[in-house]
Image 1 (spheres, rainbow, N blue to C red):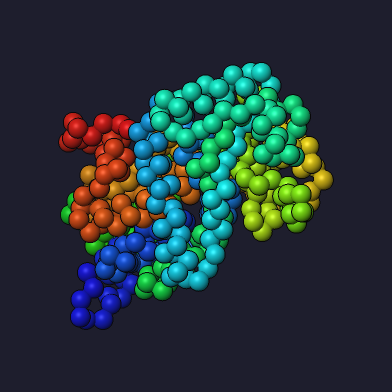
Image 2: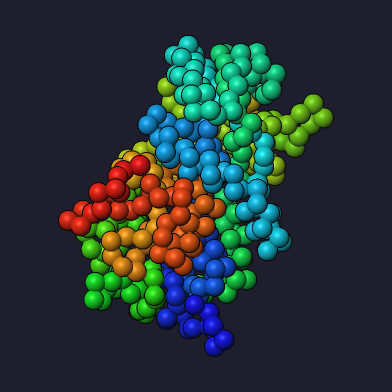
Length: 399
Ligand code: GLY
């Protein structure tokens, strides 16, 4: 903890965060705000999946069967967003691109409509705010939608943020809070006497720390030195994403005024229009290891489906194509908090909800680092649900 003596040098912080993506940065910011000295190791803090992600805060429209416990976590984080953004923007003077614009989820053909109807029924059973609309009502809200749109669900509580701006703001907030950054990759976890005591970095330095947080996204399970029983079972799930430029909003309206998600012949698609004119179109979902190649096939499928949904997209300049890796876990839910290895905490496995879960992850990790306890509503997401050591506690069941 910080005392009256000067802050500890970076080779002995209270907390070493391995990974400076959104999750690592939010954890570092909140931990520093709790009075801990914090070092983040990452060759390119603020990079990684935050460069690629569309930034949908889609607790309701990205709900899946069997993920009701995860829904509670997602809703808890969504509820924190306005205050989180206000605090971050106040601390840094930077705009995060947060837009409380809502989401419209639409269906193209009859099968897609049946699929979306099922999701809408699930949303209603879960008590969520989601209003079913006819195709005509959808087009009244978003006139650029194709005449073939068969219906949709209006979800006014699913918003968006610009993950690149969010990362830049978190980086600046961390620096202002005294977090030390080492532009370096973690090579190996260091353990001594049955506890984690830091990490060896590729700049040839060892950083010793009271507690170490593993926030390496899709690579979290690959760090050398992790005892197998606490190594998180994370796999990379590739997503290809396009960035287009929309024309400036005309008097009769914007190209799209809210996030549009769609089921297009069984496949999922989303279009996320930003205030600054960027339109993010995503995303593929591919299990191909750590490959991040943008393929002609991936771009073709996204543009084909986007064109069918909003024919005007093919008129827009294509500004950027990128692929990123979602950190997938066996139950699609994150692994948060202390592990069976004393001194090692996890903040990984956020899969499709990393941006959404950023505020809550920072908060619960700071709490677990200061108290040793994972607060509600994060308890079901303890890493110990995947712990393969013989002492696994019986109450720690999968989420
Ligand atoms: N949450 C959006 C995606 O994973 O593609």
